[in-house]
Length: 91
Image 1: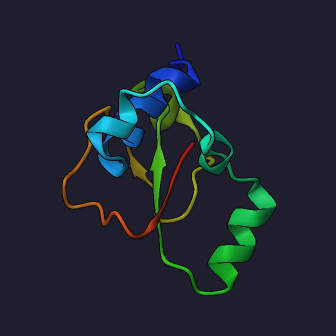
Image 2 (image 1 turned 180 degrees about the vertical axis):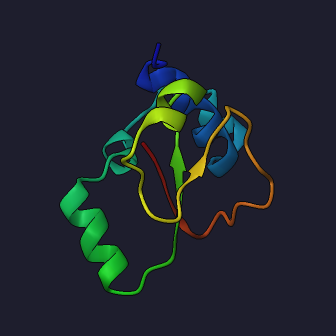
Image 3 (image 1 turned 60 degrees about the vertical axis):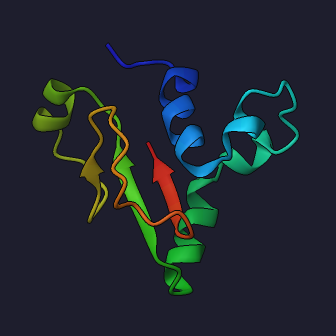
C-alpha cells in the first residue's frame, strides 16, 4: 500500500529545512513543495539538474513498466549525498 503524502514529505522536508522551521506550525511555503508534471518537464528541458525519487513500495515499483528515466527508488531513508541546492522530486 502506498504511503500518504505527508508520511513521505516529512523526511524530505526535514533534510532540506532547518530544524527550527520544521517544528513551527507555519507552512506558508507548502505550495513550493508541489510541482506539476508540465513544470517539472520544462525545468528539465531548460537544463536544471534534478534528483528524482520513486516512492512506490518495492513490489509495485518492480512490476511497473513505467518509471521516470534516471529516478532512484526511495526506501524512506534520506541520503546525505543528495545535493540540497538541487531540485528534488519525489513521486
